[in-house]
Length: 255
Ligand code: BG6
Image (cartoon, rainbow, N blue to C red; front, side, top):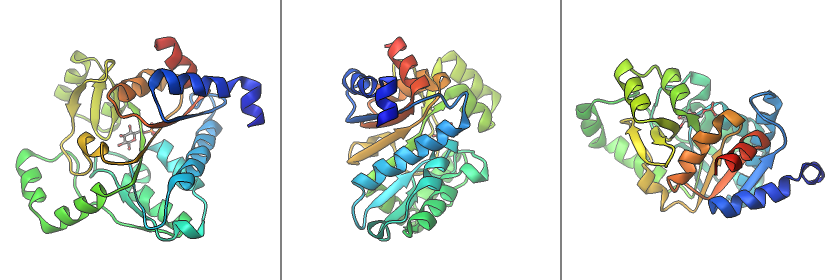
């Protein structure tokens, strides 16, 4: 709190809450683009925020990524977290093992003393595979668990960087460029107005499902991610944001 006052970050948090109509904004001093320690601090602040809202027997859904990985590392062990079930928000969307949502739910469960369920779905499904998987009993059952999450904690990516990281085919990369995709979350790609320009075919939470989830926390920092964060927030994926000073100041510049 002292550090934040020193940097005027409390005012910045309020300003962003008002301008973006968010329930809560937390800003960590610094910029992850220049200092990897800032990502750890973002992780710690998010873990603390989650603990404030999680209740016994809650289901918490997570996406993958290096930022949520820091959140998982920072989760404390608390008695009321023992009954929490952690689940991946969506099936495989092309990510390295250490950043997969499946990996992060197991880390978080281990740290908190809670439990976890996995979603074994391959990356990028064909239309046919998607429909036949959707008819599987296993998929129906885990999907209903995921949809009953009371909290979802998700990362935000820059469209182009996520496309490369996911080794998307050239046609898709060209489409993202043509449609001016800037941000990505949950496998959906958004332009700067917050309109969806591309979505990956996988199973799990859809953006429509988010409307029924009481706590949604977006976690992303770095000046370079400001446009991406804004595109996702503009698509009404609003609620709470944990970010850093670099991204926060740039978002305000863009508004
Ligand atoms: C991926 C998620 O695992 O991580 C994406 O599937 C998200 O939805 C991305 O945008 C964010 O990654 P990072 O490493 O920038 O936090």
